[in-house]
Structure formats: C-alpha cells, structure tokens
Length: 358
Image (cartoon, rainbow, N blue to C red; front, side):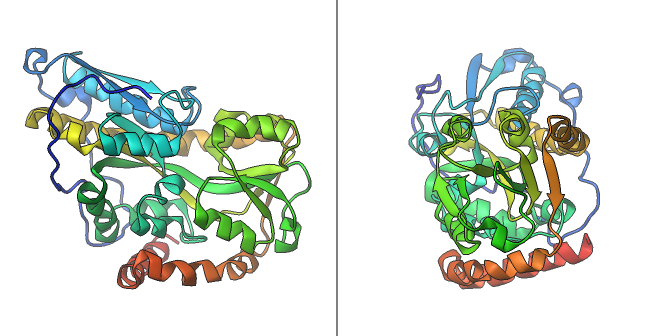
C-alpha cells in the first residue's frame, strides 16, 4: 500500500460533506461548474500528485474509474495542472478493507470505496445495503439528496476520520452463473456464488437458499473460470469491466441490492488542503458525480447488449415479491444494528423517493 505524498500533521474535524436537501425529488441535479468556469491561478497551489485507489478494473469504462477520472480532470484544469490525480484500479493500492484502513490511518490519500465493504466499518451505512430498498435508479439517486443520507455520511468524519466527497453509483446488482437462469427463489438453491466479504450480503443469499462464498473481487474471475464457484452477483458495469460476461452463461435481473461507491478522502489529508483547494475538491466531486451518472445512463444499455452479443442469456424476475419475502428478515435483523430510530426515518425517506419516482 503506497503512502500519499505529504508530511503534514494530522488534524481531525467534523465537517459536513454532502449538501442536505429536505425532500426527495426527481428533478435534475443542480448545475455544476465545469473546470473552465473555475477561476484559478496555478501559482496559488502547491504541486502535488494524489493517488486514488480502487479495486475494480482500470479500464476507462469502469464506473469507479470513471468517477475518479472525472474528478481528476476537473482538479487538473482548475489548478492549472498543479495538482495531478492518478486513478489506480485493479487493487494496486490494496483491497477494499485495506483501502478503508489506509484512509483511516492517513496512509492513503483517496480511494473509491464500494458500499458493501464499507458497511463493515460503519453500522449506519448498512442501511443502503438492505435488500430490495429502492424501486428504481431515479428513486435511489433521489435518496442521495436527502437529509437522512447526509446524516449517514456526516457521522463518519469524527467516527472514522474519512470524508466522502461525493457518492457515485455502481447500480443494481444481478446474479450471474453457469448453472441456470434464476426465475424463482427455488432456482437459487445450492448455487455457489461469490459475494463481497460482508455479513449482510451473506444473510441475503443464505436467505435465498444459495451458498454464498465471500471472496475478493481480484480472485473472482479465475474462480469462475476454474469452476471453484458457479457465479457471482455484480452490477452491470462491474460485470462488463471485469469481463465476467465472457465466462458466465446466465444473467438474472434480481435487483437485490443497489450499490453505491464513495469518492473518499482521508480527513487528515483534507484538512491540510488550503481552503480554496478544498473548495475545488468539493466542486470537482459534484462534477464527477453528475458526469458519472450521465455516463452510466448512456452506457449501461450498450453493456447489456454486449452481454447478449457474447452469448449470455438475460432474464427478468417475474415475481420479485417472492424474493423480497424470502429476505424480509434481513431488515428485521439489521434495524437494531443500524439504529431503530434512524432506520425508521430513513425508510420513510426511501418510501417517499420510491413513490415520487415510480
């Protein structure tokens, strides 16, 4: 794991990281400045190179890579090239747990973290990992603009020393495998599926009757090719960037979880930045989120078609309620762990977002 290029004293402070809105809506996001609209003088900023680590593929179309790249493009132009962002995928700076711990310790400056793994570090963030939470992508994105979601993220600055500059999207997760299409819960019986190394996902797939197998993403493709596991469960972008459509036969749109990714920065590093540079980082993060969402909306249908072209069989689930009922106990189990009061008010926000974006 590489250490960021800085030697500055660690100063921790709790600062709000997400703009808070009181209600869900399906309105378009507020306009974000482009780099060309940011007035800057490269002499104002120290020359530095910042590395952003993540565990997905480094190819340009990967959703994590895209989020980091957009952020870096804005930063470079806004600082006149003084600040350079290197986006390093393929677990070059470590696996998910290592990236998170590195941010906490100040040994890594920035990372794009997957929400399933991060939920191992903060119980409140288990909320967005609950199964069958959102009815649609617009509803899920609307929730990101609520006060409840902001509350989740505000809490981690003091608690963990990590700041989420923005939240990106990986999307709804689907089951891929080499055995059979998944049409009903009974089809899940005994399927050996790779899952993230997180307790809540194990609970979901155990409840569905599968044989969940926690495994690092860097090991998954080979495990499928060798037949060690039958398949996995990923969002579309990860399936595409990881090449999983070339090694699995079936994709079933289970939509069992909606997965986020966080553009995270070590709070100790963030506090060393000049206030003007902090402002640029925040603007760059908003720009990156908007750009990533637009990219996903454009590319996802093309990726699904590429799966079909590769010979994959894709199916919808005819009775999603059967799947929801099979894992409803997961909500009951995790309500107390998340915090009953927070769970209840966050669910009200989710229901409002689902209703307004149906």
